[in-house]
Length: 248
Image (cartoon, rainbow, N blue to C red; front, side, top):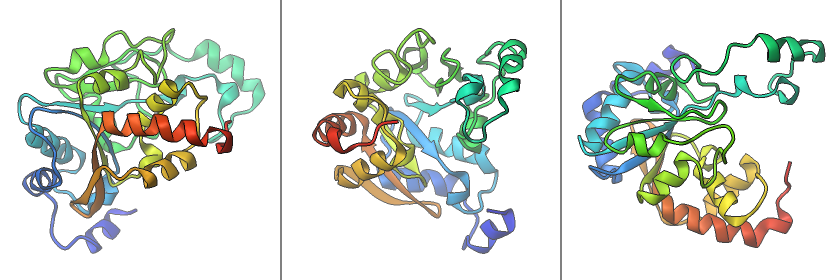
């Protein structure tokens, strides 16, 4: 969506104050640990863009809250597995050999959106060390959430920041995106002992999950839920559906 389109469909500018007010009305808990998946364009035109969105989230959480976002970087995966887009097979070995080592301080996110890309560089934010599915966090629980997340472990399972959010009884906020983007459902897969599913299965699971608050944040239809309740529901849902889910 172009900026002109965003202006045309926004009745008034979204600001830090209006977004924070919407987040509180949706039920964001001060002092909680909050995992956010977001689409900036869905919010309408925002004065300050992604910077204002991060400020609004931190304002709603207050000083004792911890903000978490995915910082995945698929550019550091095996090029033989790339599909969107693929690269020619003769390139694969050159990419593997010449690509700089993953550095949490410099590696950009891929496909996470402008808010998450900004947040990984936020002053005081820390990023986990997994080269493919890292997470960034800011706040009192940031080190606990991001610590000991390495490539030899379970990237999105019990050894991941997702599991630390679960332990902290944190929440998930889908800010203008659906359950197809909800990484916490990968933790449910791990707990259920199943292979990874696709976004279509996650969307279907989310449609059956009723324990969430739905409301507007800016122009975005947004969803707030207990991550623990979602994951526990997801474990049972996935087990019940496992013969019907097409696994890659």
